[in-house]
Image (cartoon, rainbow, N blue to C red):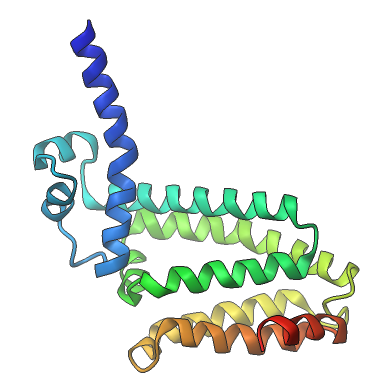
Length: 206
């Protein structure tokens, strides 16, 4: 019985460790460059053990993305609960994204959407995120930080189109993703902020 408990505990630990270790490798090197062998070697487990838990790279990639998204969402929610101010929240989002882009290979973003399960999941949460973003804009208007005269559905779509252009045109081959993100967010933020919101930006970002 004790041996069974140890084995079960070991497998449960692997279920937690494998997706997080794999997603870090995918983010650093790109999805295509990382083989299941690489992940097994990185974790110092056998390839057989890895395949007993995850059937293929797509399932492992999807699980890693899901867990990363859950961690990020939980962290942002906790920050929002402690900081009841739209500008503090959006600037924290800006800082977190900059930190992420420091170590993520642009190939990760372009290659992960080639996997159907992953692409379906990303499209699903994109719809949910859009509703949250629109609610966030309404809150920013109420707090006096964002202009009430703009159509924020259009603002969100323009933002999505801009980032798609960055990926499709491979602009990241000319400039680091961090630099692209800084310029994109700075221009977009200033565009929909009121004078009150711009004063916050001037004191923090510029």
